Length: 134
Image: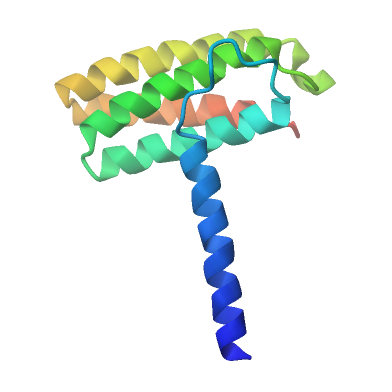
């Protein structure tokens, strides 16, 4: 019984890891509109991965994650199923995330720790604003 529980826990952890790693792969530029909830989950995973890369001093990974997150933000404008409470601000918030991601890529190249930390904080706040429940 105990082995079954441990095996199930490992399988679930593996599935979550696969989902997280899939969120780090850029979407095809010609991909159809994506559901808003999936894009928000994707952005959240990417923002967390960016923070993790920063804390582990994986500067090249941080550059790549910032580019992928910027792309996810660009997809927000054509998302389907955007909650009414988010429709008016989605374009502005997504543009701010993309802009901060551009700064983040530059900061990662220069390995500016203090400015990178502040930029990541601004990104986290903006990604949090995308959450479906106000």
